[in-house]
Length: 443
Image 1 (cartoon, rainbow, N blue to C red):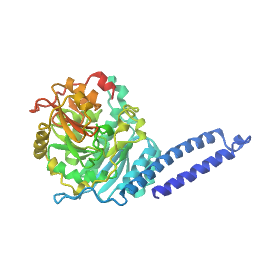
Image 2 (image 1 turned 45 degrees about the vertical axis):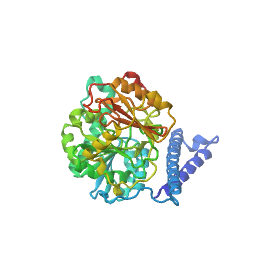
Image 3 (image 1 turned 120 degrees about the horizontal axis):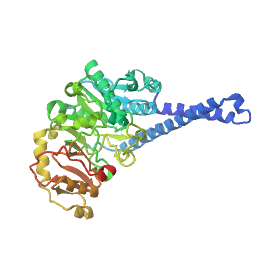
Image 4 (image 1 turned 90 degrees about the vertical axis):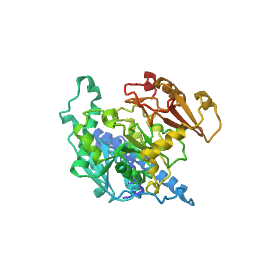
């Protein structure tokens, strides 16, 4: 059943429920419909209306994309040095707990844009005891594999007494361990793309990962490919730079790819909680980096309002990250410029050859299509600049979000800015540094 047919069915069901409710709204209502049935039908109506709204939004997105493609020639010219698409099957692991509608939406989108069922295998991993999720997955038949783990509530998870209020983060870490063990140790996949059920997906999501997968084998200083830009708000990115990629010392997560080899390193020592902060720790990162885009290939759906962090940062930050809307065939592009030796020399030389500028001068400057370097001599000074430029000012293990060799870039009102250490000879991050509380509160 395609998207339009599904929407029609949902609409028809909604009409039927409305008819039942209206038919039984007279004086003899309780003789025909019990109060329990009335409540059940009302709840079902609300659920269907919400799902219909989401499906209509997807239809509108498709119409807009088709309209934008009419009469346009490809913008991105294939390179003779392109490696082409990755030719081994990649698992796409979707983690979920109890959001059945979220699972439907993300699976619909993934299946709609998936270029090959042989090369991308969709696997839904659930740990909560909520049968509606399985029912949702079953609607997609053989297109999706479903795996169910025992509920964390019945598992013997050791949670320090001082962290019981964070128990959900321990549940999540356990779920990741179970799901990744299944993908890598049971099914022996070469690599996996990790997705959570509240993520939206760009039209070139699979092309992005397929075109960059080879880098993880070619470059031991990389440990992930991420679809997420932590500073990916509209006012901080070049909205035309659809094909621009960076190296980053910061692990972004939120739609990312890792290899079996990395799991054999990290899996046996996987933490009981807060896995994302753990993987950013210098002892695990080992000076390795991730690839990330200028324009994110994932974004947050409204399902993210309710989750482990209870909507923390959602309205102010997560929801504002822009999702790329133009297809770039990364499998036909040359990404050798992202290899470490070439990238480091080119990037550092470029940044430190740019004219320097003061932060207030930059903010008042109206000229466009210019690039500048804003130098900072301490992390205190760095955080002061982040307040003014409105980029994320916090750090993890001392690493600023999106940073590479201490350099963080933003695109503000048509001008490219690089926040860079005053000392070109970068000496590493202070893992003990933590941003001031007002920075953390303002996220």
